[in-house]
Length: 470
Image 1: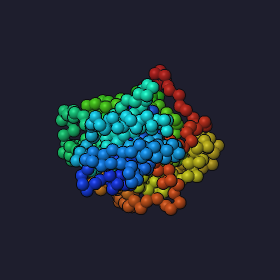
Image 2 (image 1 turned 90 degrees about the vertical axis):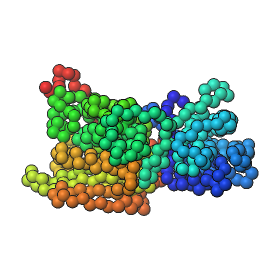
Image 3 (image 1 turned 60 degrees about the vertical axis):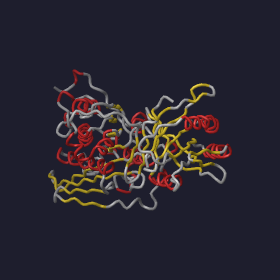
Image 4 (image 1 turned 30 degrees about the vertical axis):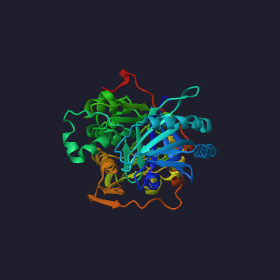
């Protein structure tokens, strides 16, 4: 495998494993699992879907733990029939954080790797769990005939009301730039935020401010996804863009600003010249642990909503609606919330209308004759906004990220700000509507892929330097 490796599971799956594998006598235990792949541009995520619990005589506890050949055969058969990969997990009860492997652990997993590949055509994924709830992970891809080599994972994330991630320990790099930030979140909290890989879909007025905030907060790895170009009319709202940037890609302007302003001393900032509903943009976002939805099209939100549930990647979304009468603002509201497993989805929050998403998917919002029929104030075509509005939405979205990771309250619900009154209403997350289709997609990985690409979408052309507005 050339990709990085990550493992993801829901809070419910995590709780089930804790119940099944935590022993009162303090001994190790194990079980086999099923997993579904989620393939990004640079990372394979193994999404854990179900356990294959041992039956009587399947495993033997003797301080350490071992298993019978019959248990392995049965587990491989279950995975093969289901079309999933095979994983195995064992416990290090007294461990803390990312765990190393003993020689016996490695021998046992290497032995299983051959059976897993033969049964499922996918590499074995191995996990270790501690009683404290931390994990470590690796895969065993085939590197030659009958030869399997361990590949260490980069993270294991547990997704629900909170996002909890375990990663291998690395030496901290500090120069004092994050001293005040760390004094608020604490050393552990700041480490949890810094080592996330965060995606920003849409680098317009909200997305550019979110990207700047991530750079200041010390996030090391950031993925920027957008195909739009900077226009002169964007400069009143687009952070870090100047007249010299007109005609440039918004993602490149944002990337340059992050590299200049970031407080992290290492990490990667990736600029992807694509929309999130195109293959390249979608796959890049699958490499992330959390995504900011800063898009203004209903189909893009529909795609991100499906991505959140199928691939266990929380999506933080915000939207602005400005109301005018006789060319003057009479009201403005913006909603900010986080969607994903164990949370209310973007459709149920009203972030997009499924009918409008279908219209957008069919390319009608790029058809001038169709758009001409809509009222100028219609949400599908209204683009009214000013910098103070978008800056506050970005700030509220960043606070949603902080809550998701460090709390103390992880789920802030739907925050709805009213410009005319200065009031903030909060609607607690009550879960999705009964008929919502997205919860059936939870942990389905690439089995639940939205249709990507829009043949009628207008693709902007890059301006040459001489065409830029000076």
